[in-house]
Image 1 (tube, protein in one colour):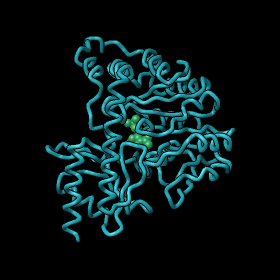
Image 2 (image 1 turned 90 degrees about the vertical axis):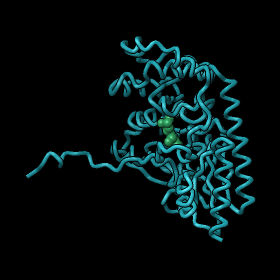
Image 3 (image 1 turned 30 degrees about the horizontal axis):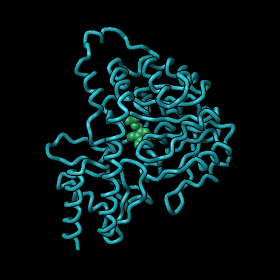
Length: 354
Ligand code: PMP
């Protein structure tokens, strides 16, 4: 006899970094920005007319798109916005990966990609990173139903440049290529200008990292008018209002506050350099990050043990129990004060485990 449970969707979900409500913790496990959002965006929130929420938002988020179009030097028809870049990526997978051929992405990458493939029934193939954790562009020559690559890659923190992206595009004229630029503002190369040259290139971005607005949920995509119109059609077949009125208003203010954006991004980059140097002095191997997090390992200590130790000291970093990166930890760049506490506890760990 069949039961209603037989009809449930069987799926293994993506697991986000732990969110702890404890006081006095150093939370450097989810690649969040340690600085508050732009004061101009915060003022929009303070002055927001809650009564206006009885109206639906503009389904096209037109003004937010216009502001982003101006910022990136593209037309408004080249911009798509959504409820965080996870929403934009999930819609893009459904919009562009409808081939019988597998889509291609690296074996160490954002762990949401396989979850969407399973959810949407998209076949996929993984190409392992090389020994230095680099993506080999030659792998993406093989026939595929699409390509998705984060640049910089996560969680490796390593970025590739224009020549690399051009090679991927030249090998894939018949597939949509998605470049996930969640971390690009922290020093990576952005492929946005290439979207004018390659009609099959979609670049996605987020307000969650460099704009300190992870809780507001704003993501976007930039690509040819053709790609954007397909994304719009799929979005409007699912949920017309993925970006709410408050997110639209605060998002606009955030993009318009370039000075604050630059200053916080530069602070994160400066702290990243200091912490990378300090960890290297302590004998760690640290990958050259172009993101707001670093990947580190130590030949003489277990990173899993260090992760557990730091947890007992209320310093939360991220450990992935996955082949190849199980010897590493991922550390989000926090404020200088938070990172001083992190380094102090790392020193204690090394001392206690000599
Ligand atoms: N892409 C990558 C590579 C990420 O690490 C993340 C953050 N988990 C996202 C996309 C999604 O971020 P958001 O939905 O907050 O925009």
